[in-house]
Image (cartoon, rainbow, N blue to C red; front, side, top):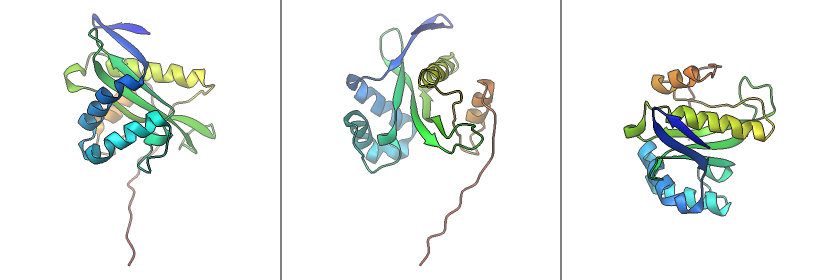
Length: 163
């Protein structure tokens, strides 16, 4: 589907294997700490195999945003999770990652990705879409709220390694 956002044509579509290098680069831009495992995760997604790293191998869909030159400028990674806090559904579509390159932020591209994710979830027969944000990432929390998400809970997870 093509959307006109502030006069810039944006194409949102499911990821293709030929997008792997661009997606990989944007993922590292989004989360530099995944640099060492990123390529393994991307390859695992396209191969449908377990990479033994994070949730990437469990992703059900990745939607990408392309500019008018067909360059990838954003993505949203979707999964299905069980027992999502606040959800009425046993299994809920869940946003694992959502990113728009900084040069393109503030132009409605993130909103277009969320709307495409909502459409994907509805096509799968779901009525809700889950997501999360770091407790300190107020920008992300506020963006979610502006797009209709309701805050369900705030959590600080703690772990102690036992001797």
